[in-house]
Structure formats: structure tokens, C-alpha cells
Amino acid sequence: MKKVNIIYWIFTVLLILLMLTSVIGSFMPPSKESAAMMVQLGYPAYVLKMLAVAKALGIIALLVPGFPKIKEWAYAGFTFDLLGAIISFIVTGFPFSAWAPIILGLVFIAGSYIYWHKKLKLQGL
Image 1 (tube, rainbow, N blue to C red):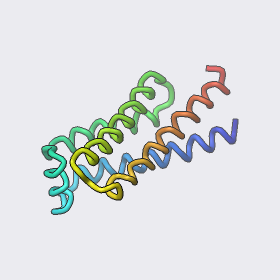
Image 2: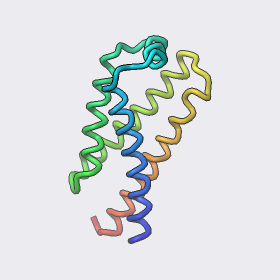
Image 3: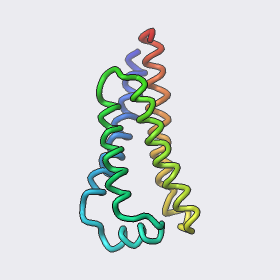
Image 4: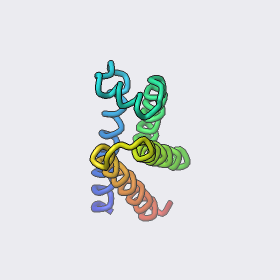
């Protein structure tokens, strides 16, 4: 149980830090490069703030004990967010190097989700 718990928290903390970085960055004034990227992706600036609020709620959902259905939705939301970002980068012609790091976020989501379920199973839930 201890090993599963440690691995779960490693993946979960990495996921939360990744999403928290995105949340904080979304509320900061955009740099010229990030503003140009959003224009190239075709998204209005308010989309970043909307996604940031959803990510913040997802972070809270992962940290609050209990509420398994809400946690499932948080994992799904993070997955949709990152897959949507990858698809947006690919469709608009960004090179692999621009969107490849997002795959690491998907690894964090998968690890956290898998070990969360292992924790639940070991707890008999």
C-alpha cells in the first residue's frame, strides 16, 4: 500500500504542478510569443482564462479527499485539455518539438489515474 501511495502522489504532484503552472500563466499578461501562438492556433484570449478556471477546479478535485465521480471528471477534463492542445498544434502546422512536451502531461495523468485506482482497490473501495 505504501509503495502505491508514494507513486500515486509523485504522479499527482507532478500533474498538479503542471496544471498550476498553466493556470498561473493564463492569468499573467501574455508575452508577444504566446499571444502570437494563440493567434496562430485560432483561439481568442478568453479561452485561456476559461480553461485556467477549469484546471484550477480540477486541481481542487484531485486534492480534496472523497468525491470519486468528481475526480473521474477532473482526470477526463485534464485529458481532453491536453489532447485538444496536441490536436490544435498538429492541425495548425506547429512542429513536433512545439507540442511533444505535452505528452509528458498525459503520462502524469495516466500515472496518477492508474495509481489512484490501485489505491482504491487496496482500500477495498
